[in-house]
Amino acid sequence: MTAVYERGAVVKGPDLLADHDYRPYVCLTDRTHSFRDEEALYAAATTTKRPVAIPLTDDDFASGGLPRESYVNPWTVVTIRNVDMERKEGQLVESTTETIATEAAGYLGVR
Image (tube, rainbow, N blue to C red; front, side):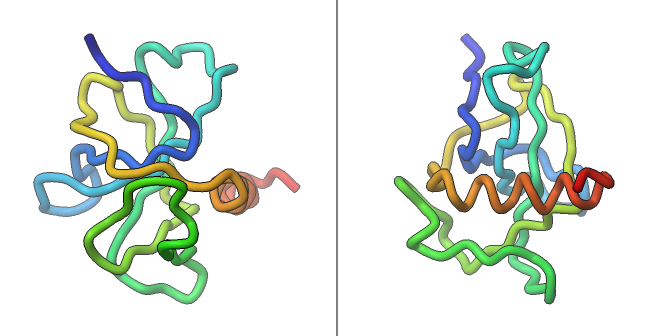
């Protein structure tokens, strides 16, 4: 059975943005998404520090974590099928997930 990840899950998935086997993503989809059982929206995480990227610290995780210093690029939102995701690395606290989602919405023109 294919896993359906909750909003705020940090999930290891295919690297759609660079020449690596995988990268972590933050699930932004909530329970209202029409195709939640098939796919979800994810913000890409990276180890590249950028001025407007959102850093992930130990305090941002309710459980689990990432092995390296990581940042979320809220302007890099992708749709990935659930079947293509490998495993959950951790779960972010709600306030961090909301910050990422709000920043992502801003890049889409939502104010």
